[in-house]
Amino acid sequence: MNTRLTLPPTNKEFILKIFEKISNFKLIILVSIFLVLFDNIAFFRNAINVYPVSLNNIIFLGSLAVVLTSFITLLLTLVCSKYTTKPILVSILLLSSIVSYFMNTYNTVC
View 1: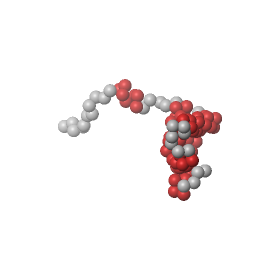
View 2: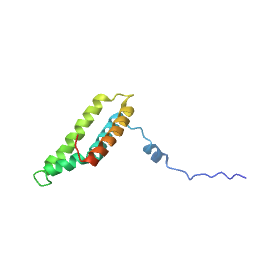
View 3: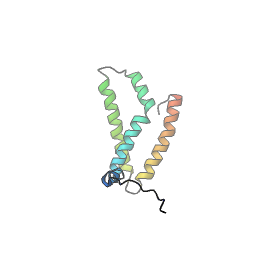
View 4: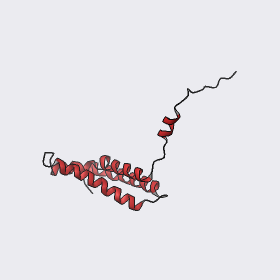
C-alpha cells in the first residue's frame, strides 16, 4: 500500500515569484526603509517634540524621513559590494536593533 501524501498541484509562477532573486540595490533600499521606519522611533519622537505636527511642519517631517532614507541608501550603496552586501546589512541590522533599544529605553538620540 502506498500511504504517501501528495500535495495538490501548485501554480509554478506563484512559487517562482515568491522566490524571485532580489537585487542588491533593492535589498539596500528595503533595509534603509526598515531602518528609518522602525529603528529611528526615538529620533522621530524627539523631532516631533521640537517640531510639532502642524500644516507648516508636516512637509519638514516628511522630508526628514525621505532625506534620512536617501542618506542611508547612499552610504550602504558605497560600502556594499557584490559579495559583502548581506554580511554588512546583517551586521548593521543587529547593531541598529541594539542601538534602537537603548535609544528607546533611555530616551536619547545618538
